[in-house]
Image (cartoon, rainbow, N blue to C red; front, side):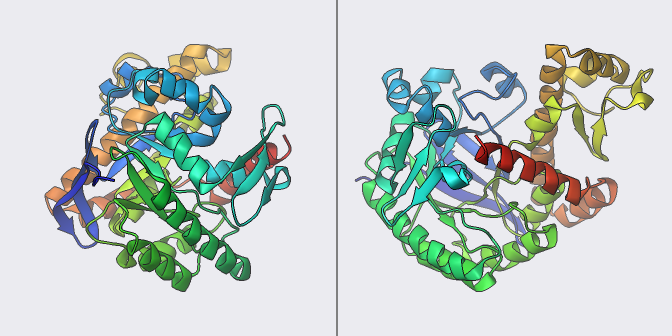
Amino acid sequence: MSIPPFTFELSHCEGHARRGQFQTPHGVIPMPAFAPVGTLANVKTLEPRDLTELECTLILANTYHLYLRPGHQLVKQLGGLHQFMQWPGPMLTDSGGYQVFSLAHRRKLDEDGVLFNSHIDGSRHYFTPEKVIEIEEALGADIIMVLDECAEPLDRDYMQQALARTHRWAERCRAAQQRGDQALFGIVQGGIFADLRVQSAQFLSELDFPGYAIGGLAVGETKEQMYATLDETCPAMPANKPRYLMGVGAPEDIVEAVYRGVDMFDCVLPTRIARNGAFLTPHGRLNIRNAQYAEDERPIQEDCDCYVCRTFSRAYLRHLYKAGEISALRFGTIHNVRFMSRLMAQIRQAIEQGKFADFRAQFLADYQISNQKVRHEQRQRRVNAMQSL
C-alpha cells in the first residue's frame, strides 16, 4: 500500500502548545482544531454551507450509527460521506467502539471483536477490527480510527487486559487498511494510569500511524485526573504526528489540553447544550431560559460575529426557546459552533504570537466553569439511557 497523502507540519510552539497544520485530501486542517459532531452525517440543525460560513475546518461522523442506518454500503454507493452530505472539507469518522461499549448488557466481547445488539431494532452485529476498517473505508472520511476497547478508567486490573487487546486490534486494523487516501489513527488507552498510558503510546508509536488519538478520558474521572493523565501521555506520543483528544469539548478543557500538547478535539457538547438553551460565552454558559433575560435587549455576546449575535436580542431568543420554536435550536447551534471556531482561531493566534500562556491565564480567569457534579450526572443519564434501550 502506498504512503497516505498526509503531512503534518508545526510552525510554532510555546511550551507544549503547538500550532501546526495537517494536510488531507479535502484540505488543510489548521491546528489546534475542533470538530463539531455530525453523528449521522449531519450536524443537527445545520447545513453544510452553515459549517463553511462558521469556519469549521473539520467535522466528525459516527461509524456505529452510519453502519446501522443508512448503511455503509449505501453511503459508498452514493460517493462516500463527502458526496453524500455535500461537505467539501476534511472529515473524520470514529470507530464506533465507544458507542458499542456503552451498550453494556447488549454486547459481548471476545478476542476477535465485539458482538452487540442494535439500539434501534435489537438486531445482532459483530464488529471486528477488520470489519470496522471495511466500514470506515466505505464511508470514506479523511481520518479514520482503529477499533479499541473502551474500558472503565479506574479499574487497573481490567485496564491492563483491555489495553493488550486494544494493541492487538490496532495491529489488525493497520494490516487491514487498503485505501491510501485515509489517515488511520491509533488510539492511546490506559485509563488514568500514567504507566499504562506511556506503555500504550510507546507501543502504538512503533506502528507508525499518521496520527494518534487519546481515548478513554472525560468518561467519569475528575478534571484534575484528566489533566494529570495528559501531562504524562502527551510527552510519550510522537512529536511529529497530530495528537487528538477524543470526546473532549468543554472550552476550559480544550485550553488546558492545548497547553499540554494536544492538537485536535471533537465533542457533542456545543451542539447538545445549544438545543437545551445554553449559549457559550467568554464568561461561561448562559442559560437563555432564565427569567433575567426576558427583557434583555443585548445580544448573547457583544463581540461575536455570528448571525445570531448580529441580529437577535437575548429576549427574543429566550422567547423562541420558551415557545418551543425549532428555530431556537438552530440559532443556539449557530452561535455555539461559531464560538468554538473563534476560540480555536484565538488559540492558534496566541501560540503564533508567543502569548498563549497569557491567553490561557486570562481565559481561565474569565470563564466560569459549569458544575462538574451536574455535568457528570448528565453524562451518566445519557449512558444509562443508551444501556437501557
